[in-house]
Every structure is written in structure tokens, then in C-alpha cells.
Image (tube, rainbow, N blue to C red; front, side, top):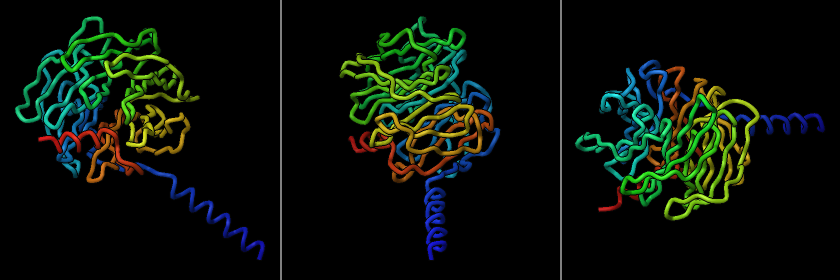
Length: 300
């Protein structure tokens, strides 16, 4: 009986491990996007957007089944990276070649420069609060350095963090009291206290990975951070305390960014730069940005 019990116990452990392990699946066709495939975001209807479709400088719209098509072409000299929705009908784009944050009207498809500063290296990714305060990561890849900009709801730019490593993924906590910033080369994830006016204080190390790169990241409604591990072929999930609580394996290796959508906000969409497509997996908890979009949609 003891051997039988031992075998049952081992089988139970293996079953638990398998249920915890997770692998993403394809969402869109491979090769549709360039090697700069980035910036996923989801609108109130469940459509997914990503940058650099077929050629750099474009943005695609995908329906719920992953069928892609051109949405807009950015102005000459602009190339998109991160995308964030500011309300139901507006999204912002980090323009890394034009040193801009662009504003796109979902209904008219008009594109305007919302913020510009020649001192920006190359705006990489964006995070946004419910009040419209935007934070922009700004790496200098050649120097392995970076900084963070605050863009006010009026479009005014202000440097709020400097002398950092290669700043990349950036996100606001669900209570909007913490800003998270990661550094791709140095493999650090930092947390800052976030004031209502966009000021940052009390920089502290949340987590440091031993290997692999990092790219975009998003919070769920409980404050867990989903981090794209560029080159590792995975998405790591950190608790608000900085502990890795889950790892999702991806089919492609160069995971560049992530967003949340779907009927209940638990569908994660990720961009892959080596396969030029999007993949998807089911998260345990709805995303913060999905909850924000629901709030936007509820407003008249």
C-alpha cells in the first residue's frame, strides 16, 4: 500500500505541475509584422492593435479571431512602439524615431503630435493613469542608459527619472500609487512611489533576473506584473512583492510586449519579433488596462 500511495502522491504532484505550466498559442499569422512588432492594445470592442504591420510606420487592427488589416500609417519619419488607450476613442503611440508621443483618434483616424521633446532618446513604451498622466520609457541603447518622462494631460513633458539603465517596460499599479520600470540590459525591475502630479520618489529594486532580457509589461487588477522576457521565450509574472509566481512559455523567443483584453479581461495578447505575429494565453486575473477600458466605456 505504501508504494501505491507514493505513486499516487507523485502523480498528484505531476498533475499540479502540469496544470500550473502554461504555453501560449498563435493568435495571428506568422510573418505579418516586421521585426519591430510591438505595442499591443485592445479597444472597447475587443479589437487588438499592434505596430509595424507589413512595414515599419504602420498600425494594424486585428479582430477577435486574429484577422489583421491596416488601420493607420503614421506620418513620415515616425515609427511606433508602445500603444496605450487614454479613453474609449483615443490611443497614444510612443514614436521612437520621431521623438514623439502621438495621439490617434480611433473614429476619424486623425494622427497628431501630442508631445515632443528633442531631448528624448527614443520613446519606447508608455504607461497611463486614469487621469491621463502618461509615463514614457526612454532608453539609449548605445550607452546602455535611459530615463523616464512624464507627459501631462495637456501634453507637457518633464523628465522624472534619469541616470537609469536601458529603461523599457513601464506600468502603473492598480491603485496608481506606484510606477514600475524595467531595464532590459541590466535586468532590473524598479518601483517608484507615484504622486498625483506625476512626480516620482523612493526608487527601490523590486526584482533582478539572472539572465535574459526584458521588454514591455502590464499589471493585472491585483498588481501582479506580467513581464515580456525578450530572448527567453516567456512571460514572467511577478507578485507586487517582487516574487516570480508564474512563467508562461511562448512559441516565439523575442517577446516584445503584452496587453489584456477579451470578454472578461483575462486574455493576454503578446507580440513576437522573431515570428512577426501575436500569440495569446489565458491569465488568471483581468488586466488593469482592461478594467480602465471598461470604466472609459461606462462614461457617457
